[in-house]
Length: 252
Ligand SMILES: NC(=O)c1ccc[n+]([C@@H]2O[C@H](COP(=O)([O-])OP(=O)(O)OC[C@H]3O[C@@H](n4cnc5c(N)ncnc54)[C@H](O)[C@@H]3O)[C@@H](O)[C@H]2O)c1
Picture (cartoon, rainbow, N blue to C red):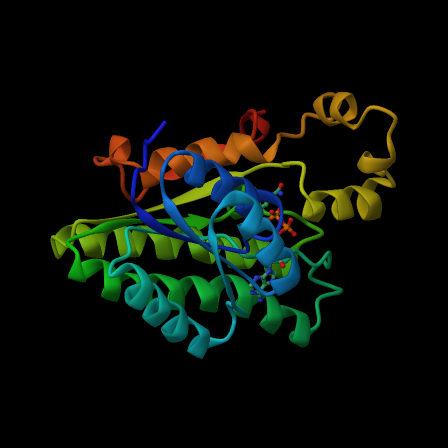
């Protein structure tokens, strides 16, 4: 308990899946969590349940970042952590991806991660440091045929993370920046992918847990444990890394 006691941590895309699991575990470990999401109804409900604060945000809107940081500074006076987690994953190969789809994915993943990191660093500097986690994917390491824009965006997040990490280290800002690369984890995003690509409805199975395990799919807490570690001072010597959580998928 209390591995991130009193740290003020923002988690984006926290109304569902991985972000929700991160917010819940960070709160259990003593953090003051600010959850953001474009889905305000679910976000508010989950934040009430967890004992966190909710801020409605479309991460692909640049102005939302200044508003969020200003609210956090006003309410908490500091920022210790940011988890850039919000995401979408439209299924479209190089032949099927439209320009509109491409721009939307880049906006939610790449633009938002850029704005999130930039605005967080500004606030973290005032209190002497912090930790940023950018949610990438194994798609950044191996590329996924049915996910052209998503693979490109996650690859960009991986490289952006390393640039930020080394800049912050050289500028002696006390700010660490790492990326996490999950394989398949059981969330609504992956349930949709399973239905579309494999014609499998995990949630309609008689024993979804058994099927999840049989398919080698992880659970959201597998990622949340890593987020807690990277947000905590236990990882004070860890920056610029890519933490792969995929049950070995990328090594076989
Ligand atoms: N589940 C996996 O297997 C997996 C694997 C690798 C990476 N990821 C990444 O993890 C992150 C979370 O994915 P998930 O599986 O929990 O998906 P999810 O669909 O369950 O949750 C995504 C959340 O992001 C929010 N969101 C979408 N667009 C937004 C926007 N413009 N502004 C603010 N919030 C927005 C959604 O409302 C939702 O609450 C994503 O970045 C995803 O790419 C997931």
